[in-house]
Length: 172
Image (cartoon, rainbow, N blue to C red; front, side, top):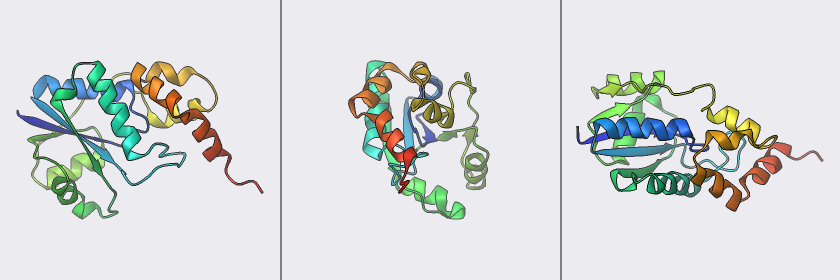
C-alpha cells in the first residue's frame, strides 16, 4: 500500500504512538499522521498546541530516520461523527487504509467503505496519554514512556509547569 492513516491527539506523543507509526510504515510507503482535536490546547486533557504536537512528532521521526515517510496534518474537531470522515479526508492527503484500534474510528471509516486495519498494542498500560499526563505533574516516571525528543521538547517549553498551572486552576 502506498499510504496509511494514523489518527491520534498525541497529548503527548509517546512510545506507543511511535511503535504504531513504525507498524504502519512496515506495510505502507508513507504514513499520514492526523493530529486530532487540533484546535485544543492548554487544558489538562489537551496540554499541547497543534504546533507543539507536530514538532514533537516530527523531531522524533527525524531522529528515528522516518520523517521523510510521514505527512503530519492537523484535524480540528467538528462534533459531528456522521461527517467526521469526510471532514478528515478534506483536510488530509489521500490514503489507502486507516490504522486504528479505536472503536469509533473503526466504525466511522468502515461505514465510509475505507479499509481499517488494527494495530498491535504495545505496553498499553504504560503508553497511555492520560496516565502520562497525570504522572507529569507528580514524578519523572512519565519520561520513560516518551521518546527522548519528546522529553527534551517538554523540558524546553516547560510543559510540566504548564500542566501544574492548568491543573491548579483558579482557586480564588
